[in-house]
Image 1 (cartoon, rainbow, N blue to C red):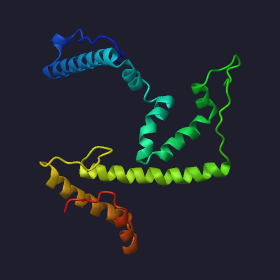
Image 2 (image 1 turned 30 degrees about the horizontal axis):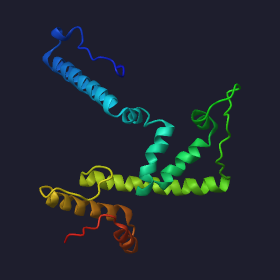
Image 3 (image 1 turned 90 degrees about the vertical axis):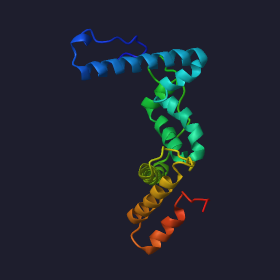
Image 4 (image 1 turned 60 degrees about the vertical axis):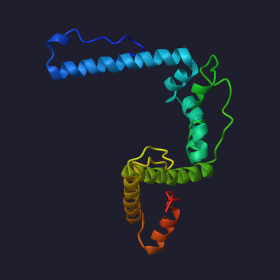
Amino acid sequence: MIQRNSKPVLPGNIRTLNPEAKKAANDLFLSLSLWLNYEVEVQRAAPELLNTFRHRDTLPGQILGTVGSTYDDGELYLQSLLVGITEEHAWKQLVRLDGNDNPSVLCPLKYSEQDMAKFKTEYAKWEKDVERKMRVFEEIGVYTGWNGAVSPHDYNEVVRRLAVAKQNFLDRESANEEERAMWEKAWPFQDSVK
């Protein structure tokens, strides 16, 4: 197990390792050294950025990170985080606790059973849409959040992969011609250059 912010060391038996294991140990040592140097430089130049990286997987970090993605179809994800903080164990992580281990401030958010049922249905649909989009991104071979920009060198290949991905998507999602027309209309990657 590698400790964060610890100085990387080569294994004591590096000289006796076979060439493949020795290369792997040296590569790991180099990678860890570069990462440590990166963290030191980031800490020096932008300490709040490093703090953000360290806490990005915590509930407060997820809430803050979601603010930007809310404008990119992330409203339901943000809503799921807000629903999550209404749970007592989550709320206790966000506010100061009193002497009895209770939150010093009650959570101001409350959801009715009807609201929760509606939210769960909408969230399940949203998750399915995100999965659809991710599958298409994987088929095209682009990164998550791709905005359609392609280098001139890769343009023809990406156009070809996009056409294949579109056909696969329409075949996968359509049970009949009416549905196919609906999905064709909803296809988000319309090429403005013909």
